[in-house]
Length: 229
Image (tube, rainbow, N blue to C red):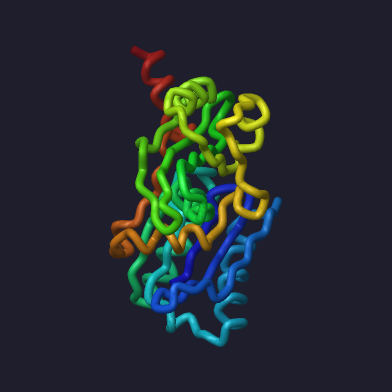
């Protein structure tokens, strides 16, 4: 299985042996370059360096949202192109779930926190048994204050991960909060692969981006339409 995550500032790819449950290779780059410039070369490197060929791929898993609009479209488009060319299946995985699976060894409550806009965050909370995850809440976009209240009401210790975790941890200090270490805090394709194990594969045509909020073009159109009424 090839895993891809281009949902944030990191471009990440991983090659995972589903039979041996082993990460054969993983590469994550915190980059200022466009994901379209880096993700395919990374995938090619991983496959070649592990002695495999593109034709060996059975499934391609990709983080399909939430996250950067442009980044998500690039990752999903690259996945569709590969699957179409190779005739293999694909799996779309929530970015929030992939983040949590990067920390699945933690037994307890894991909360993925990603920056949205302003004081809003994308978030979802999971319970981990050290091997798999069960969602406690639905994925949503809410204010940081609302999230802090929900976690406080829950009354359990929580591991925070995601690109919004550091600021949240600093601004809402609580003895109940623990923050994931830097290497497991941001998006990582290994987490996408682990999350994909609990999902069924789909056809290329079924793979779509899940933004969790309307894109700017949709908002602008709604505002324009409302002003004309």
